[in-house]
Amino acid sequence: MSDIPPEIIREILIWLPVKSLLRFRCVSKPWRSMIDRKDFIKLHLRHSYETNSNRTLVVDSTQLFYVDLDSFEQLDIGNNTQFEPQTVACSCDGLVLIVVSINSIVLWNPATRKLNKLPVTPLEDRITNEAKHIEQRYALGYDSKHDDYKVVMFQVSTRLDGGCSFSETQIYSLRSNTWKRIEDFPYMLPRGKRWGVYLNEALHTVVKDGQGSEVIMAFNIAKEEHYEVPRPSVNYRLSSVEVMGGCLTAIAPGKRNSTEIWAMKEYRVKKSWTKLLCFEPPLREPCLNLCPLSYSKSGDEVLLNYDGICLNWYNLKEKTVSIACVPGLTASFNASAHDPSFHSEFCVGSLVSPYSPAGPGYERQGKKGKEIKKKRDDFLSVGFKLVL
Image 1 (cartoon, helix red, strand yellow):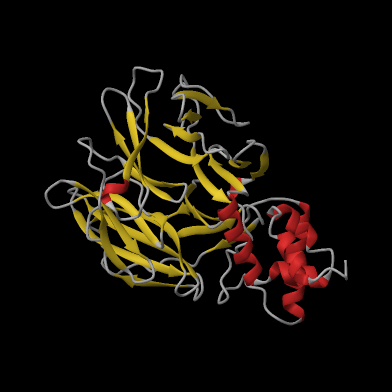
Image 2 (spheres, rainbow, N blue to C red):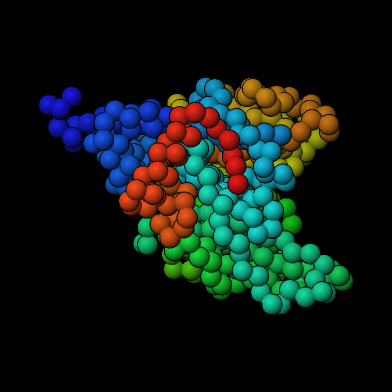
């Protein structure tokens, strides 16, 4: 192996899944150094996106399931007894944002089994006794200008009379391991709406403007600026936006119990909106929440989360629907009210670290740092538990 140039070894290694790379760190010190380098981690991530590989799915139900997207083989089951209640908010570049409770959020890389509890969000003095409750929404994205992963939190407090007491927006920088107050989100978020779908270094959501019309708003996390994205020309309301195959998608409930899904082929170009599919479930009841997750490996099918009840493959050519069976999840359109619902997130397998260079989880230089690193490597090779 010593006769093979390092460049060739690197080109071979970037084709491997994270699980194999973690094992191959033990081959030699040069291999470990290469795999741990930031440029290799970025190269491996970019290669995964370009080749449509290392595709996984995080499913949040009674347990955290981490499965291969193509085979639905279970890669791991998270022991989430430390996370009750919990919500998988979103994912970006292999990092998953988990909301445990107000002011308790976690960055988790399920592929490397690394977990980082973020510092507590600073609360404003305007939280008074008249506030009925505080609602927080979180989103995660990557800022390439500063090479930084950022968590954006929108917080709103409602009074006892039902009115809004105040709202504010905070942004967390993984690089500096700090929160700061930024310009408030210009619209109130409707209840139940997802906020902060990440694409092109911006977070997207569907809101209502001053005239009551639904618009797609985006927030650039590097420039910290808000802007509007043109919506598709449909007569129906938009229930939400998602990202699939590198494109922004809009979900619009259509006639009767059908749901249309539109894809924006060219970002911020209104004419590029194209109707991808019209989903008609084999039930009379309307679908309340249909979420597109990913294309199949061949690109002929789309994976859909149907109301948190079951996963479906929609064949784009034949316009047929089949149930995708995932071990541990209910696989039926006729799930009863007693069956647990689930939330699912597309997640690329990556080596991206959830730790901050300024935080306690970062591997420092010296003897103490080597001891921390050794303990972590031993942990990765033995088992998988999410521990705060």
